[in-house]
Length: 252
Image 1: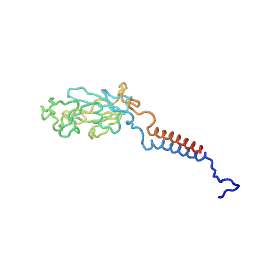
Image 2: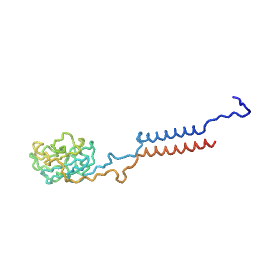
Image 3: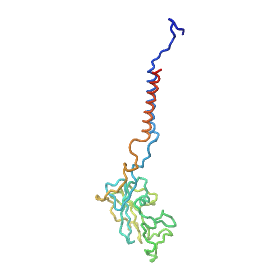
Image 4: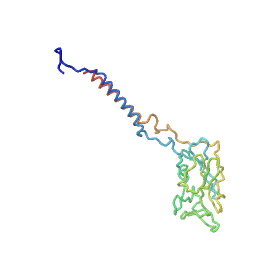
């Protein structure tokens, strides 16, 4: 369009609105990033529930969290019954894993490996004559699977009982959180009921809690997730960039 009145034709547009609009868009993008980072899983890795499994001697008490009491009944092998507490477990923890948490030494047979328990904490001993009805001088060598007259039985019980003979191996069967795991040596017994653990599956009220590692320990992630911090940092950078662009446009 030709100019009239002798003056040049100049276009006019408020310089502040485009800059303001761009600044708002940049801010919205930054906020979107702040929300998207955590949604995409870009957060600091954390241990499950912030707890590391721990074990100790003695039964579990009411304060122990996600724990099972392990009872080892040696019968006539010459050692008193022992109890342990494994805490900080999950519903997927197996009986074998709970034994490892409390430090019980498991020796499997050479025939089946650890799948078939031959000794617990060294018993029956390699030089211990335990005898069988048909073999009075029998000594457990752990070369083959232990015989039916001298083997470790595996039991489970919820808090308050009753004890139930486990029909699945301890390597694959999950523990019952809050309950009991029982290992009882069957020696020349004709029924499994005869070697049912004699410890009543009830947590004593005075049992001290296991020292589970809780959130806030050294090395544990605390504070906002990394993704959120990155997103908020992006917001700040974009806001600064928007302000710089707005000022440059105003100065033109």
